Length: 266
Image (cartoon, rainbow, N blue to C red; front, side):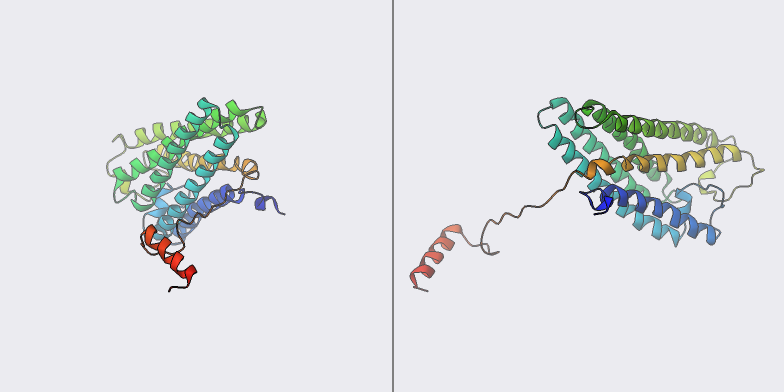
């Protein structure tokens, strides 16, 4: 059995690979069609103009649903491992809520493009990466609380390192974006898809775009830390029938009908 066939470890792998592919495919398409500059454009800019906008949107929507599934499995695993620890249980529920909010933000990013509905797009980005960073913080705290009984200290330090990477990317992107869009370098920069290295504000623009790519991949990298954990969990659905047919027949009538059938009266 291959490592990705153990338990549900394929789920975080599929999430990371698919999400990374959505960024890369839309970037390649935008570059080939000369819709953006080759050197580190905003991720959102690579999904602004058709046809890459269509590809970007549908792939990120699928990523959002895979993210929800991954976060739900993580929630069920932590709950099963710590059924009687109230502190961990509360944090686990908070983590699931934050994770679902982050996935909803990803749907907003996918369906409301930056150059069309900028402020809604920014709200989606804040939900995805801002709330997502808090989700990572909660999961890192849970990892700290569960070591060394449930897992080793190594996984806690790895998740803490990725969290710090994500946080530094957020700070860098926020500061550079505030400077860039402050009005010092002109107006209507949101619609600007091509930059000249000699232009004012180009440095702030590059710092902002590099920070965005760094943020995106730091966020995805966090889910890679779930692979070993997910190798040790499986979920299954239990079917429970509430009747022998799909008719809306009163229970008393069904009982009488079954009695008559047994007696041979029908």
